[in-house]
Amino acid sequence: MRNLLLALLLLASPLLHSDEGRFDPPLKGAYLGVSLGKISAGLVVLKIEDNSAAQAAGLRRGDVLVRFGHLDELPRMSVRQLWEALSKLPGRTAYELAVLRDERKVLLEITPDPALVRDARALARRLKDHRLFTALKDKKALLGNIEIDLIAAVRRSRSTQSAYEALNEVLDRFDISHTAVIPPWSYASMLGKGSDGKPVFHLGLTIQKIAGRTGERFFVRELMYGGGAREAGLRIGDELVAVNGLPFSNSPRRTLAGYEARHAMYTIQVDTEESVRIDYRREAGQAVHSLSIAADRASTAIDSTRKSIRMLGAKARGLGYIHLWNLLSPETVSIFEKALREKLGPARALVIDLRGRGGQVPVLKAIAKRIIADGRPTALLIDDLTRSAKEIVAYMLKGKKGITLIGETTAGAVRAAGYITFEDRARVMIPVNVRMRIESLTGGIDLEGRGVSPDAIVEFHLPFLAGQDPILERAISLLHAGAPKPARRRI
Image (tube, rainbow, N blue to C red; front, side, top):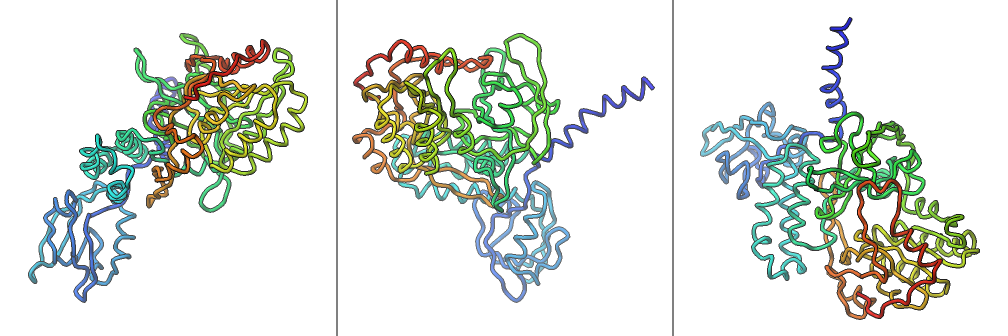
């Protein structure tokens, strides 16, 4: 019996890895790097990409594909049918390729790239034609080599998630905001629904990687109000040690949260209605604790904003609080206005949390206008993740009577964003050329790379906060004492 138990323990970790591995599969698809045409003899090679699998294998223009591995019906296939068949094959596998060349059958060996290389090429072309990127004089060499660098990032990656991270790191070299890879699951969880319209359940948290003397560690950075992680008992600043028994640093569930690589932000992939075990440490050097979190809700930004609204309690008597999770939906304005009238109506002063993601211009303008019209003393909470539309709100309100910005200088990430969609439904967020529209709200000042500085500085150190919120605590203290006179400078 003892030997049996030992054997089971030894087997447990590999089995667990295998089960968890479904969240980070190997890169798939067989991308050749050729353009094909249909002729009576079959599929003819029209063009061969530089730095491609086809070039490395020795394919030539005019070659007619006869057989690819076990696919021996190529002469009867259309180009689309071949691409569909290749998309289902595993990448990085050597195949025998038979071609007709000068009326002779020639056998070649080809090791196709993963399909993600095709997306990398398309992304590179998009960046090279993008006026914002071509205007970066100090990044000309980077832009010139961008296709090579993006392809190399995919080729050196062992799995899908590691490829997303590698691509994200290459994009971040441009040092422009709103330039990030968003994996399919992360994008769907942000919206709370998938491309099919069905709810996507998630835990409602983001995790930040912090490098220190003892190596890289991961800490809870954001928790949605009403989300599973917050309600289960996780707190901002908790060290996330493991998920389902696997170190989070190696967990296949770890995926990018849709930020630029410099922010090192992640989230946890889950299946709908499953429960996961989270091992965490609340205090430095202390024991690791465990809790179970159920993926039983599709929390949205609207849900989190609505559930954040509250009077702050006995230690902050007379102060009302709301966290605007983002400013994407006009519904946020309606929720905000209703909160000011009803739940926050009795408050003598307001704490409005602007930490986190941005939104859209019409929403930010409406929010800023409503804050000014309210007239009560107001603390706006900001930090280095306050970005985009929220930075513009902070800039517009800084220096206004009764309004105090508290926390850290904002992210300096104010480029408007668009998306490129990969074949696997991953998105690449890239900035668009609408600077003038944004700068019309800031008096012509470009906040990109600069951000908005606070009136009252609070140094924020994430690790082991144990649920404390020093920025909020400073706001409470200042509002009780009477807020300081706002600074005249806005940035």
